[in-house]
Image (cartoon, rainbow, N blue to C red; front, side, top):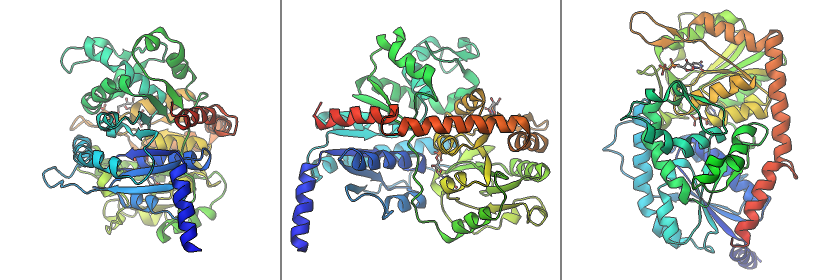
Length: 488
Ligand code: UDP
Ligand code: UDP
């Protein structure tokens, strides 16, 4: 019987059309790509191979890929580990991206042989995240159509497509002659200050130059969230003129809450159970964000002064002002939070909040009825998870395109910005305790907070309808699925 079962499953694997998905390490990319894979399998009858980059993979990624509730037609292939001894530890934004790009580049040396060796029908498509765009040439060589899954906003995609135009207009690395705004045709203007040039430029140009050669771009957004930018792609003469592939807004694809939670995580959820409805502010800076020691102190006092209940993922402070060290994520840090939080803070706030050092089950936290506000670094997945659970935000962008995301959320009326003040001695800008207190109160109490939460709930219902059976995002994915099935 078992042999027959195997035979049947082999047959069905030969028959089901096959898609391959490739993601760089890091939860912000793996999570939405896995959710895409899950939908392609469950709703559209594909089998999907996920090529996982294992070097520097955080524990949370390993856990996600081993999750027993993933569908059986999802096959995870671990790409070989690469030697990173020649790169630095990746601490701080300046180190993280080069290290990540190095890992991807070295790992992708094996891509050709891996794609050839997969014991399945040839992939109808290869879907890559932005850091894996280099896979395009290999896949094209093997006649596999390549699609980008942009794990950010449509606005960020518009910037990517417009970037060669901006780049041509500036002198060296100095973009100041552009003025303080970047006006992409048909889109809302972006603040130059929000673009973090030191992080975006080389990487963005690399991506921009390859976009025209792609067969399509999937974007983790939906019509009601970014109507202006999405119409610009369809109607604006600039986007019709530049060689650009079709764009498919298929979002918001966020992690579904089926993962087993570790015991420390379940304690956090038990604590939430005991709190009154809409009383807790959740504080987290994504899978890798850390703050300086000085900034941690201000945040601690800010939370305390607000008098609001809080659940804070407080990683030990970084050396740099604000940084990302994706590669430490999910580790159980043995350090005692009392060593880097203000004296007596944990005692004084014992009744008010909980602090965890490494990782919270974020989706379960955000969907909990006790949670009403989210102090967030505005990573796109955090933004989407907050919106789909109707939670208003306090923006605290750290790196990459997060400042753009923060501005959009404030403009949408679902978030409040914390003012950052210049610290006199060393010219650094940090958010002071009073500013933090004010922003937390604004979201958690009063009319303005109510309006923001109401707006978040409106967006939440638009997300639900975009993903419903006849919703626009579902329709987009169905069109793509049909195209791949028909071999188009
Ligand atoms: N995340 C989590 N627990 C944490 C921190 C992060 O589950 O303590 C998840 C979060 O739900 C999100 C992802 O990690 O899905 C982070 O992605 P995002 O795009 O927000 O930020 P990034 O980590 O890429 O900067
Ligand atoms: N910002 C924001 N919310 C915050 C902190 C910063 O939207 O909580 C934006 C805001 O536009 C601010 C800008 O980020 O003016 C600069 O912040 P930061 O000092 O961190 O960056 P820097 O100027 O050092 O690059």
